Amino acid sequence: MPQKDYLKEKQEKAKTTVTGIIVLLIFIIIFIGIIVRLAIRSGTNEGFFPLMPTGKDAYEIAKAYIQTTIKSADAEFPDKDYEFTKNSDSVYTITSHFEARNINGEVVKTEFTATLKYNGGSSSDQHNWTLVKLEEH
Image 1 (cartoon, rainbow, N blue to C red):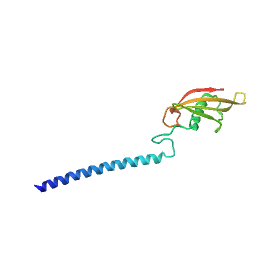
Image 2: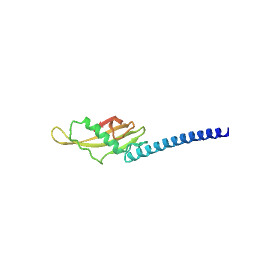
Image 3: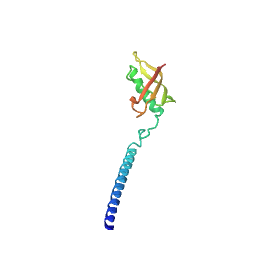
Image 4: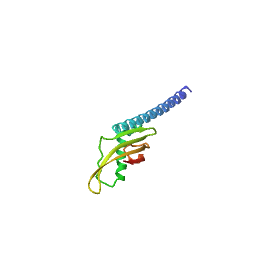
């Protein structure tokens, strides 16, 4: 009789050990997956917890929205001559200007103020932004 108990106990310990090894392997695989994902996305703003967009991100999106509203295809935007403010609720206000040729071929400088709302996701994707207001002066 003691021999049966010994075999039964040994089998139970083997089951527990196998279950523990399987759980440990699952955790190791998940950990490696997280590390690989972080390594792939380390240079971007699209990790597990993406950062809020910068003023440059908002300016690039504002330029894209303005390009669709103006008729001139050769509009030039300054790369560093813009101002931005970040308001609450992920609302950004961009103030800058662009230069474009009018019908007569003259270069016209147009000032603009764009108010954008960031909705989450990739900050470089225009679909993740909403143009709240666009004023040209």
